[in-house]
Length: 433
Image (cartoon, rainbow, N blue to C red; front, side):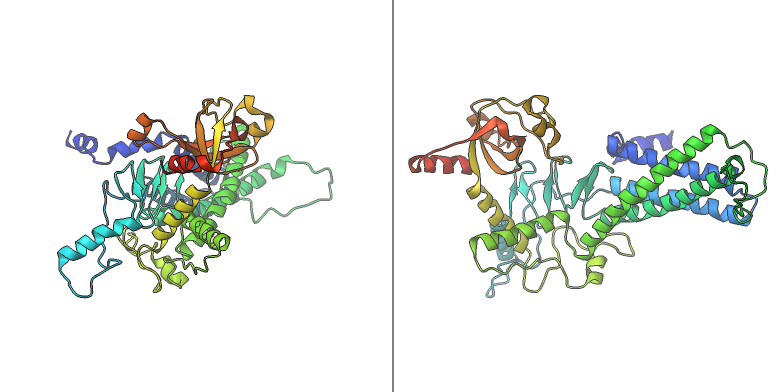
């Protein structure tokens, strides 16, 4: 009874709901099918436990499964780490502007409070976004050092779980490669005597691969089909997850998240477009791949840092990247184009009634689609030939509620607004709203 009570009051029990999502369901199903079939094929048909090699092989398969699940569940339940609600930058030991005359702690705190002008404010979390943090629409929180939201773990990949997530991406392909070898050898040894190649002179020496033993059950058609199915899953997982592992290692060795790489690219485009002559230096690359690696992987398993303050390049400060983000946000607002809705849109991901090109060329992203009503106004910030992304101009009630409606919509549903210089100021006011 005491054990049951301890389980019920477990503080993170609500996190179990993350399992009930298509991503974890598919991922755990693939892990379960590949692991169980590899173990069954080994001990029944290919490499029984009554041999030394069979026992070692069995232990290795069990170890792969345990390590993969350990890192997978840690990546899911430990989570990326979240910025506290209503957070303000009052904890930095080295503020951006520190008085050289007075060292009174109260004055330092005041200076840190003034540093909020270099940070973006999150209306949903009612606090400021710390450096390297971003708000995740899926998690509904500001995430520390957010790289991306991964549907396979139904959680974000960020500061606290980056090492677990990357370890899972490494171990899953290795385990699948081992399982794939078991599937291939099982099929080869069991079907060799049953396949006729049509040439009596063809002889293949199978003495090294075959084991003389009496299996518990025959290798039936059902077993053959299950083995082939598991082989396909193992090979597909090896390719797909292996590619993700190399992407994540590239991110770690540069100490640059996927979002930060996109920010850096936009910074270079902004500097080139306006010819400002700035020299943007990415602040978190420590200049050594080994030093960058140690920021994520440590012997204790806990990443370095508190997720708010970071070691930076000697020519940068804690707010170098956030200042660049504010510049890009201002530039984005200035370069946005006003459109008027001329056709209703129900917010479907792949709308059938908006043309074949719109249906088949929908953006491959988890960013939302927004409903449109004829007569509404939208400020578009980017787009493709068939889709556009922008912010909807809100009415007074929505503006007071501090909501923001932005997302993708079909290009054919809107038309560009044409206004003269007299109406230009009104348009700028709408942009600020």
